Image 1: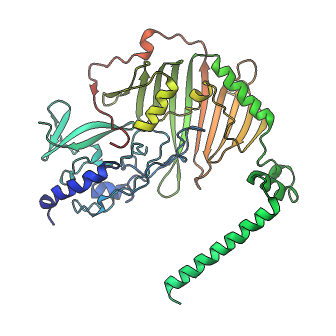
Image 2 (image 1 turned 90 degrees about the vertical axis):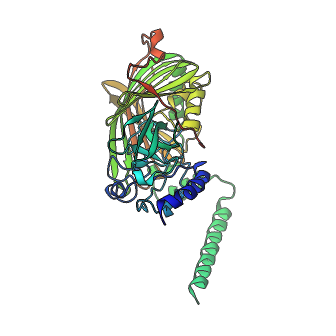
Image 3 (image 1 turned 135 degrees about the vertical axis):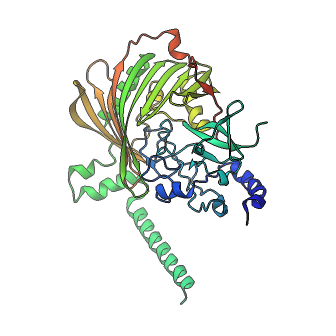
Length: 165
Length: 274
């Protein structure tokens, strides 16, 4: 299977999944660094992983609200050998913390650093690929892929988008 | 017997056992609540400590009510919190993150919140119409429309955008929500000092959290320290906050207005279901 021929299919498959969950596509090295599970003992790791202590007694406690435990759907995406796709543990607590440890709370799992070959529209990453310059008004473009910075919860993420024109 | 048959047989066994246990419990305790059952069963063999399970001491509830009644009398306040928050990593190890939070609050329709934990900093500013979230490190900010009160706004932020704030109980207690509504147990631990202030220490249990609170002695019964444990997580991650209050803060019109710095860039925020 080649990336080029499968990408449109993947995009359409993912379009359904994206309604509730955005796929994440950590690079192999990110996944390895993050212990294969996504976040683990590495600040730059992907989303998921950490379970936060509840930070409130009756509202939005980390252990009490867990909206989205589904594994994201694209474990068969054969781009970039990304079988270590995160399980999306979206604990709600501590949503203001951001950063690698903080599990994102809006039903979105997030990869660590964007890998150009794994760019699926809607994928979200914590950082851009190296040397990815700004493009137009508020976008980044490199390797044939356009990224738009977006907040996901309190985390800044870079989301793969169509050519903004 | 093949594997599937074994599995079915084992499952049936468990079901039967569960039914027996359930019917036994029903037979002896009738309609008594579960908590009372625990108390009655353990009271014979052990003395006071176990008997305290399931008991909500009236004095502990009164202390919470006095605190929330006092909070209702201070429509503007500023509170600084030093926080320690545990996360459980993929190997079950607790990792503790230290942070600092400042809330500047003008009821019912203004707040300016600053959060810092590790190298992450965020501010949330609410002016009664919209909320701005700002990350000074990247210069990225986002704005979303908000309802007319702090409490509604925090609910929306959590529901729609996945943004929660620590100890948001403060914003419910000061609106008259009963802090004792979900208690399974509650008792007075004893006198204590927090940051040089005399306080009373209480311990509570709810369905999913164990929590403790240190309430200032005297005519300003403010929460000075709160500890919350995730009781349903086997690793029992803990959050603790020490609070320093200013109940007569000096706010200006700018306190609740976000003025983007020169390098700031507005970006979208994802909402739930997007």
